[in-house]
Length: 269
Image (cartoon, rainbow, N blue to C red):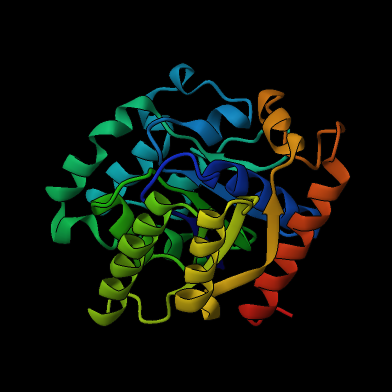
């Protein structure tokens, strides 16, 4: 089971758009995909047509993590909280009460660092569960990010050539290095995905060159330009594989190209 975490310590970079559509793209290949919404804003949950406020907190990802904190998480306890969506993507939905999750994790053993890793190990031992797990993370450092990175195969980082984004990238790479150097997850890999990308000004080009100079090895080859299909499909609560509007076929092809690239990097093909 491969786990991909969409993360950057800055909002507005398209983490949720990538998370939902990467999940849909893997599903197009016939793989079994679980999306885990770890952001209290619940954008991925809304996108996939679920009202998080209609859920009891225990039926969201909060219930899974509370079980893990009490050392009673099993594949069965996780799967009973998984919800199907109109997209056919399975999701562990977010809930607004997840705003308190960092405090809950801080009080858990080892700061909750290995909770998700334990949950995914339970799922992996069960028959006929998931090939791919996608994590949509909040734009913040802290115990939620650390817990996710401890359980992740590859961290996917959506980025544009902007000063604040570059600063957030440096902070995330520091978090990744800490996880690796402390022996928590030495195999953790990073792929930087250029999203909503349109470097036009001189300043944009300077940041773009800095990105190549410092992170060329981690940069994915697939680049997502600004396209209406990503914005409009979100408004329709659909992935681009279900949405049929302008630019959708071009964006679908890019997502399929990205997951092919990821599968090669991770030795799946």
